[in-house]
Amino acid sequence: MSGFGLHHLPYGVFSRPGDERRIGVRLWSSVVDLSALGGHLAAASLNPLMAAGRREWTAAREAVDDLVASEPPLIPLRDVTLHLPFEVADYTDFYSSEHHALNVSKILRPDSPGLSPQWKHLPIGYHGRSATVVVSGTPVQRPSGQLAESVFGPTRRLDVEAEVGFVVGVPGRRIATTDFAEHVFGVVLVNDWSARDLQAWEYRPLGPFLAKSFATTLSPWVTPLSTLATVPGVAQDPEPLDYLRPAGPGFDLRLSVEWNDTLVSTPPFASMYWTAAQQLAHLTSNGASVRTGDLYASGTVSGPARGEVGSFLELTRNGAEPVRLRDGTSRGYLEDGDWVRIGATARSAGGKEITLGSVSGTIVA
Image 1: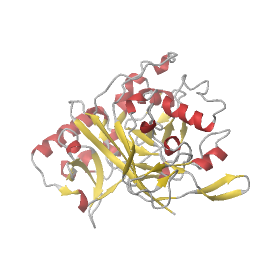
Image 2 (image 1 turned 180 degrees about the vertical axis):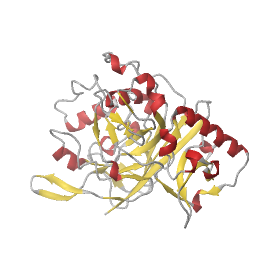
Image 3 (image 1 turned 90 degrees about the horizontal axis):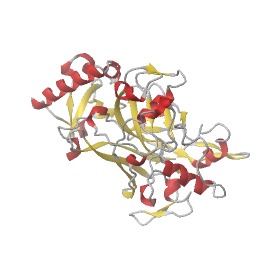
Image 4 (image 1 turned 90 degrees about the vertical axis):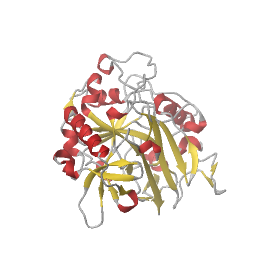
């Protein structure tokens, strides 16, 4: 639990039996109740604080640091229920890993592998369904849908997508990349569950729909954006249009994907082609607005190596090359009862190693 020390203190929402929801921060394997600080920190979700803007975010952080320094009572995590830390307004998912896009193309379109013509000109994304965003630990029911012509039934190719999510605090429209940190409150881990057989049948011509809308799982802990160290993004060629420049900061998050207690992949977020600042700028470039509580996700995080991919579609080559798990069983895609956990570590702005709140879920029939 060393990644949840005094240099991190991610925000979350918790409750104890018979009590109302409260905002807290995680310290080691415990929660510090922030309700006594009053104001935005006495709310039942992070939305009021997130809407207040950067000056209030800084003031709240100083108050939290002072409270923690006074050694307040710690509530063990085992004694609380964790909830969605904010009310999700809208949800957008991007497709910003060049390695992931190329892997998918090679696997699903071997006769014409490569990126689509527009891929390096704009961050591609789609609008998801906020009503089915759930907190980590919520069971995920296997979805059903059309699998082929005249065939309806439960998906046989249930997959994960290891992603990083960015939480909007301050509303806005036509947001410049240089204003990214004035609008984005924090960072969470995301699992964008995907039914690949439903997706293959439905996605042309309009893209993902029912193959992804059944569930998206979110970490219960929001790491403030200001907590994370930044790194340069990857080189972009061709040079993006003016509204996508400068690219904005990159983040050196190192993800991990566990499948039934077996570590199967370690995706590197620093390899993402499009930055979170560019994603927000593109999302609002047509005049569309974002609201407090909007969530947008990076898209599947995949690196160049087989052990750095963020989906089982890539890891198992669409089920053709199953992976062997610690218990001796093999998997091409998720089976009922399987459990997946996505975690991440990063460097804080102060140079310390921190651990982001993980996101997990178990598949039920």
